[in-house]
Length: 355
Image (cartoon, rainbow, N blue to C red; front, side, top):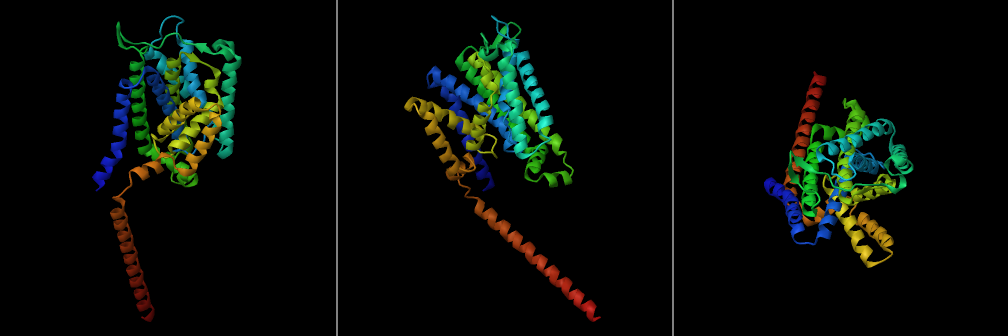
């Protein structure tokens, strides 16, 4: 029974991956580019979910890490020649991780609403840094005239100028990020992060270095957001201060809430739902923002735990009853044994008293 349940759990991801691979061969180029954009936003949402869903820390500055990586690519790219992905990608990710380390080391000294406000303040500071400074184009942003090149010697491994090739590179990045985050949340580090989220005092009492665990998660999250920002800037060939603004951070947080906070790939589904909904509503009505807000409210009310609730409806855990029954029987047995032990101890005490 456990094996059947395990197979069902892998069925949905396998089907979705097969559909993602087949997608560019059955739709026009516009939808291939649209899918690439959506997958990258899914990567950004999953990076945020590491600190929100598994760390219990609501951050409003993740768009800053996303935008920093994009600006690093813009500043490192020659004007008319493509930059090398092999060194610009690590540089962009390192810059985002460094920013996350600095912001996290200060923001994590606060809790609750204060943490939210501090991350929001840092995000806005970085927004205005790029908005008011001329070194990166100021409020007009900066252009990236060529996508990064993936060369091995004189051989081009992947031509990112081709939408189909770019899509599959982004899909490979997405799969790698899902694998990485799954490994993290299932590791002892992930359990320590969740323990700090559920009961910080108890986690400290058990000896967990809560501040270090949270800071590490925040830096990893910022680095993954940088990966999404790098490829997003490469796709559109343009970066602007709006990439760092709190509006994008709030939008990504909504993706996390829609998809589910306790699921690695849930925020990806949230990104698909939100961006797909926007695309449909823009074509249907000029008041699409109003309709979108109402739909999001309905989704959150109907599915408080996001996509996990929907998966439970589609894939009910039929094998759970025997397990629950066995657990209940075991618990009853333990209680019975405990009662016998207590009874025996009481008898011994009575005999000792009579003696």
